[in-house]
Length: 216
Image (cartoon, rainbow, N blue to C red; front, side, top):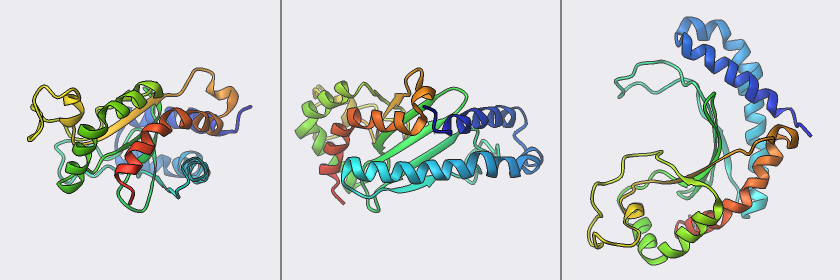
């Protein structure tokens, strides 16, 4: 049974399609009330409800976030002012794996991963891959999710001190780790929130490995 969030996705896709055709302040200001009422507000409700469900599934509290429609263009050559997608995130207060939801005219996904790997955290991640890479890749394969290209570009070579022919070389080259899974066909009949909840268990074993690595 639909939970009403299918309407959110339909309206969001229509809005972002129009925004892509006219990504200007004039268009956005003229449709700001519609965006706030029909997209942002329902998305915040979805984020709050999903945070409760993730807390039950993982045993840890997750803070919900709806990403801003305004792009940060300060250091970008692309000065387009607005994002043309709806992204939500749930994360623990400290560094650790986060969950994502993304909706656009091209995709509808649930994701999970850890993006801000730098220095000590990157070393911790690489040591985990070296130590537990077989368990990690087994859990990834069983999840049905795909390794995502989100985040910084991977290194061209395996970082030292690991061998260039390391069995998990591709994972060692990464400076972020994220999995994404497409929502199944017919999700509207079950409802968006229930569909997302049904997708969590398949990805949860990967989350547990990352959570053990970055316990916070």
